[in-house]
Structures are given as C-alpha cells and as structure tokens.
Image 1 (cartoon, helix red, strand yellow):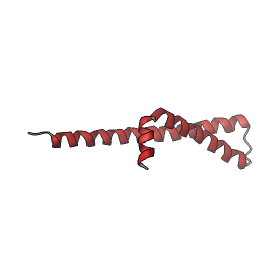
Image 2 (spheres, rainbow, N blue to C red; image 1 turned 90 degrees about the vertical axis):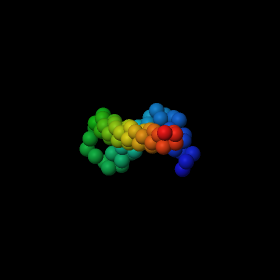
Image 3 (cartoon, helix red, strand yellow; image 1 turned 180 degrees about the horizontal axis):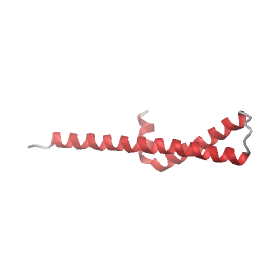
Image 4 (cartoon, rainbow, N blue to C red; image 1 turned 120 degrees about the horizontal axis):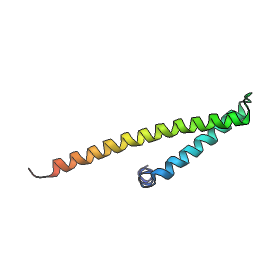
Length: 83
C-alpha cells in the first residue's frame, strides 16, 4: 500500500487522468448494458459528466490530503526545533 501511495504522490496528474478515463469507461459500460433508450451521444455526455464528478471528488480529496500532510510536517518541524 505504501508503494501505491508513493507512486500516486509522484505522479499526481497521471493518476487523476487514469481515474478520469476509467470513470468514462465504467460509465459507458454501465449505460450500454442497461439498454437505456438514450442515444449514443447522450450516453457519452453522461459518461463524461460522471467522470468529471469523479475527478472533482479526487481533486478535492487530494487537496485535503495535501493540506493535512503539510500541516503534519510543519507541526513535526516546530516540535523538533529547539526553543
């Protein structure tokens, strides 16, 4: 698990792009199996919207993680420095 976290922290944009592409693929696969009455163009639009929502969730989570990670290292540095 630590190796995955390390790779994701080094390749942030790649991991977000891969998640976006997998979100589109999953949404298209789900909508094509449901035999919905939507046209293929509308299925693609919905898939893109689902992937964008997923990307916003991931970006927000990454921002929160970065904030708490940075805050933790600042507290460690302030505790380690002599007064």
